[in-house]
Image (cartoon, rainbow, N blue to C red; front, side, top):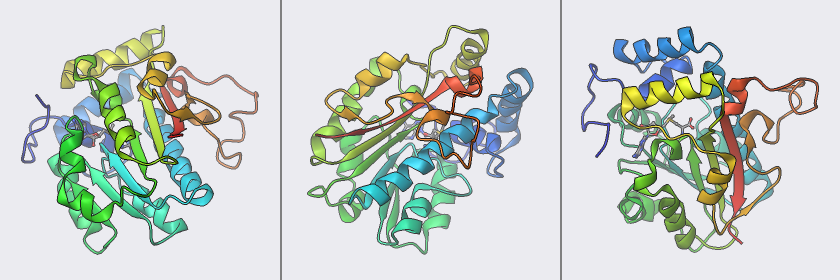
Length: 272
Ligand code: SAM
């Protein structure tokens, strides 16, 4: 059961293309812009979520490369926005970094292959993240990733697209059991909140894609069972190790976060 076809369908909205539209990209169609415009028009401010999420992801990848020996990444539900993808951030710090992107959106796969054609240290694996065994055993994954060495597994804005009955915790557990101690897990996730904006955003996603499960901080932490959650914990993405230069007023107590900034949480965990 999936909301993605095997070929690009310009008449059916796609999560990846709506997200691309919100980020200012060009890989989207009128149906995607229609949904994106619902967010822009009825939920102004929601666009900031996509940027806050990408920004926390970028900081996390930078920190992983600069503070650990990890040079291999599996990015699950990667999308492929125009700039600052995981391989670009990681390879900026160390050109030897290797990245396996996993997504099932046909547009992401086409765009990804074009973007990565010249890059020998990246692969795009077209497998559903709900089939972790399929990702793990894919020849491209096995070629690029050495599972004897620590890996960074990235769940950026993907687990809220996995419903409870599809057991998102089991997906994380699968990867935790496959990677060695010292491996890192980045997660960002839509947070439940008792306010109309949060509820409306969840409703629009549910109505459009038939999926979208916002979770509380405790529920997000539970997904990382067996991992050590690193400082500062699961927090609004803008507060996850903010760079003072980027957001001088965030994190220093000068102002309250908006409802939108609270809607997306991020965290980094380590396998003990
Ligand atoms: N990870 C990127 C980020 O944080 O900027 C993109 C997040 S985007 C909101 C979600 C991505 O997950 C889309 O590219 C979508 O195609 C992909 N996706 C959704 N469900 C998936 C599934 N079951 N298997 C693989 N990819 C999936």
